[in-house]
Image 1 (cartoon, rainbow, N blue to C red):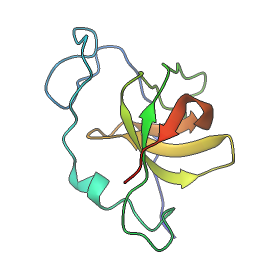
Image 2 (image 1 turned 180 degrees about the vertical axis):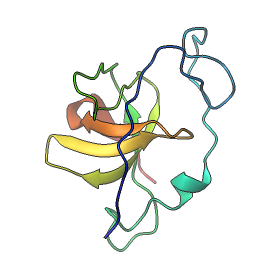
Image 3 (image 1 turned 90 degrees about the vertical axis):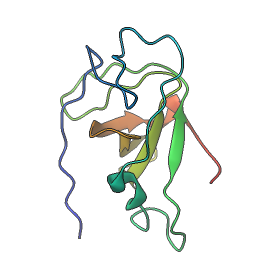
Image 4 (image 1 turned 135 degrees about the horizontal axis):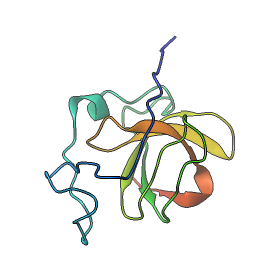
Length: 110
C-alpha cells in the first residue's frame, strides 16, 4: 500500500511551474509535467497507465489543513478517490497536494 503525505496548500504567493507567482499571473499557468506526475497511475486508473488529470472549473479555498487550494484553469492529478464527493491529488507540476471536492473539477480525456 502507498502512503501519501498531505501538505497544507495555499494560494498566497505560490510559485507556478513557469516561475510566475499566482498573484501576478492573469493567464492560465503552464505547469511542467514532473517526475511525480508520470508515476501517478494504477492507484486509481485500474488497467490503464495514464494518470487521471482534471481541469479545475472554480476556485476552491480550503477550510481544513488537509484540503487543496485550487484556482480555475489549473490541472490536478488524482492520486486516489476518497469518496464520491472528495478526491485526493496534487496540482500538476507542483508538490501542493490534498483533498478537493469533485464538483469543482472536470475529468480530462487522456
